[in-house]
Image (cartoon, rainbow, N blue to C red):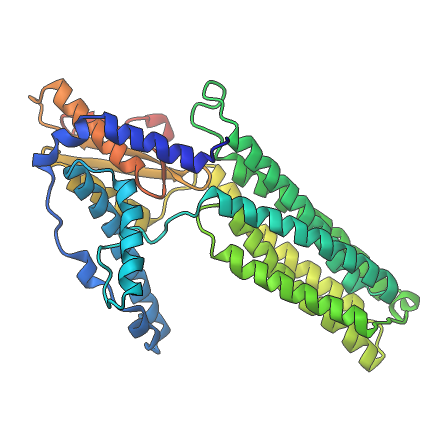
Amino acid sequence: MSISPSRERGRSRRRSCSRRPSSISIQETVKPAPTRFRALRMDEAQIATIKNRKVREFYEHQNEMVDRFLEVDHIIESLERGENPLENITNEVEDEESGIANGSSEPLLAKPNLRKSHSSTIVHLAINLSMLANVVLFVTKVVTAYVSNSISILASAFETLLDLLSNAIIWYTIRVIKHEDYYGYPIGKSRMEPLGIVIFAVITTTSFTQVLITSAERLMDPDNSSEVIDLSFASIAVLVANIIIKAILWLWCRSIKGSSSVQALAQDHENDVVFNIAATICPLVGIWTKLGWIDPVGGILLSIYIIYEWMAVLLDNIRRLSGRAATIDDIKQLTYMAYRFSSQIEAIETVRAYYVGDKLFVEVDIVMPPDMLVHIAHDIAEALQNALELMENVERAFVHIDYNTTHTHEHTQAF
């Protein structure tokens, strides 16, 4: 039976927590939480009533930071008790759902990590259903475009063909990631997923540039722009059905967290909803007004929209794959983890984090007492490394020990 990378990574992390005595040896040195962060959360319903957008965004961001600090508190306190933080998260979520189901206004236990990933089964189901839907929609759109002679519907059919290609790329990258090769890929193949998205984004933007050129040529040719468009009631019904199916897939995929591939599919389905609505409206308006140029104009606008959307996805994934720095909120959360972890840490010199795909590589430099025994300093640093790697947004962490802060930067060639 194959195991997803995220599940296998979770199992390896569970092994690291259970086998390392260093996580338990620091129980006496954990710093207490500076405040009860859960009490600082504002109720979502109360936030929704705030009319000022900036004030509302402030409290939404504050809730997000509270959730981040609660995640750290949960990991620290679980390790302090000698428990497995990942198993406790699952239990707490189940207890919270049980408490709410029984009518409790507050969850029975705190839910520190609100960004919990979904299982690989749901991810694969979303990918497979998206591929099946795209096959059906592509066939119906090709037939409708051929019958109606509409370039907007043809562009929509072409976009669905690209959806099939994107599903194939994502399906292939997921299969590649599942086959582990520790010696060939010592840190795993998780970056294959955003790399596949980059490839698809390049293909999409290039293809729709050609659609844009074709639509412009048709618009500038009086003979072609005046061609009659014919949409029957059955064709309109097919286009409306496409919109409904894509809207359902979009809302479902958007709710699935923890996979950049499924999130890319969600954005693709969202694009399809907009695309299909425009591809339906433009021919209908052209028929109603008897203006043939409206259809190629619709093709141009749709092409520009898709190119703009996927260029944003392309640039974001390129920045992440090329080592873009973590956000300020990420740094705050990581620093809080290092701060709380042990009172024997005299100072936190550097916290550096950068993307390697969807998650972060973290480098933390801590200062320990000069007279501390090597094995004690090692155990604290390694336990901190394990704790950092338990965080949802961390792929791998490295902890460096020093005995003072009066030295030059490590890796000076990077500065």
